[in-house]
Length: 484
Image 1 (cartoon, helix red, strand yellow):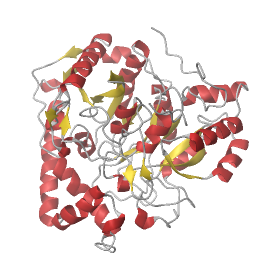
Image 2 (cartoon, one colour; image 1 turned 45 degrees about the vertical axis):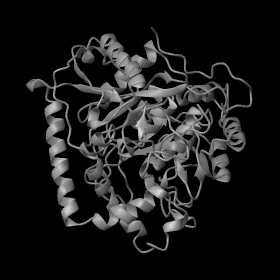
Image 3 (cartoon, helix red, strand yellow; image 1 turned 180 degrees about the vertical axis):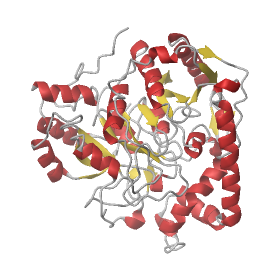
């Protein structure tokens, strides 16, 4: 089967934003079929008409100037994009999605955003909503209210990159920035039917002002197509000397799509329902396992069922690892600020912050060491390990947009801590993982997560491309911001 058609496709109306992918939008700009200014105005109308609450801030004067002067020869020349609220743009609000910092203004622009704008030519429309400090996998905050999943209003698009996911899947913008410190790209990608690649740690630097901290966060994007994701990383990756663990620049990920099929043949794959001791909905897992087996067959890979894929429990360690940043932001205001915080962040300050100290940090590093050993064993092919692990991106379909985090998945007791167990391991180990659209349950998207060893992103993209070609997914819902 050939490459899927990512062009504009059937438009419900001429006033909608581009419903194809970003690459096809650039092609339309270059051919003269469409203009950056017209596309930006369509995006603005869609934002104003939408009930998704996907954007928290618009910067239209700047965006209109950029669209009018767009260089469409650049990789994303003239493409309007959403910027995740936790990323920074100089002169824009710098709230961390927290009401306490509603008046703060960013002093600089994040490197990933600057590269997308300057190298890529993207037009920055505004900020997409995020969960407070990126700390939970739904997008509902005191400062912005609740963001909805375009596939079903009233359900969450996930978090923390929930606004970006809602805007991209809801047909408002073709792509937007995301960050993944515990699943915050893969979780919303899975809930919204998008491509979400969490890259190897350091692939896109966290500069300026990078703090190594827990070493769990990576920058990326949420997109409608594999080629959009590949192009994004071609534009935005590369070393920055201000972040010593950032990786040297690589390129050719987009042009290399389709060229690695032979490299996948014979690769060994573990298909794991309970990755990270997660409890996954049996109904959803039945579909995901079938999707995994089909992908394995499509690529001529080998399923291996006798590999020990057990991992140490990492939820508490991840929370401890990331609590230091929260303490730094809030300690001076705590506890007087409690009413301005979401319940999850308030709970973390009440129970997590007091526990942070030398003993907790020692336990974290011990657990991380255990995880590193386990991951190295799993991906040691020469000693009977595997090349990839296939699992779920989320324990179940999208839950209530206002929360709380569910404790039951598909009728199976999981506990609120179940959220993130599928995604935490790759953040703490620093290896890449991708969420690939894999169908629907009760009309809501589900994602197949493929986890690989460090530096295996191009093969993960090749796997996603195979799914895209053989079983194409809908790029957007029927109308931007439509309710069910």
